[in-house]
Length: 280
Image 1 (cartoon, rainbow, N blue to C red):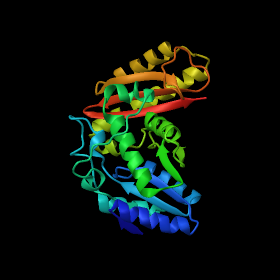
Image 2: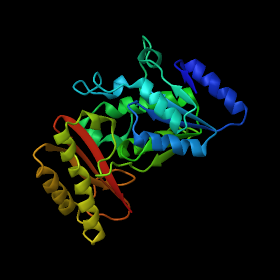
Image 3: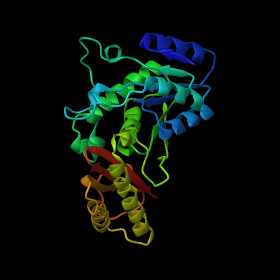
């Protein structure tokens, strides 16, 4: 296992392995690794000769009142977990390496960021796509692995790869959940024991929504009202948004036809959690 902190060193190391005919898989993370991240690393290890896990808490994707300063950074623990799951290289650049003095170029995402989290976190995806393309250019991977929990993010990155003609495959992997259904997230550790119990309302709402669609109910408004009722019956929960959108365009739909995504963002106490279910 090797830890690399400089972009130029990372690029040269990867070029050497590419010249040897090896395939490269990248798992971009902000650290605080959990089983969701580890499932991505294990899949990357199965599908590539060399696996790079980036650990970088990206300052430009956090809003002014968000949790950048308190975001967990257990680096030594993360390295051990990543290596055990199959990582060969940890890419851990500092903020000054990624955004040196005088840095001024950013990537502007398109219409896919108009709704869902993009509507509530205006600068978030600008920061996400900028750091992701910098990671792609630093690691020069064949494949990059993302989780479905951040569904809008995955769609935005796939669109960016297509629009900018990047020679890279984006692999989106299933949501990994706790035994009680809560989607695994680095932010779950912010929850108090009472909040942690309350947080299961997101999965419960999606489970009910899935049952409604399976029974033939396709009216998006009716499904959203039922989801809202379930979540708002929990006193610690505050809905940020509930949306049902086309799975590809992320445009809101009135009737579920073909592929659709039911996406939620909910505050449990002060912690904002997201979850989703893709139908069809």
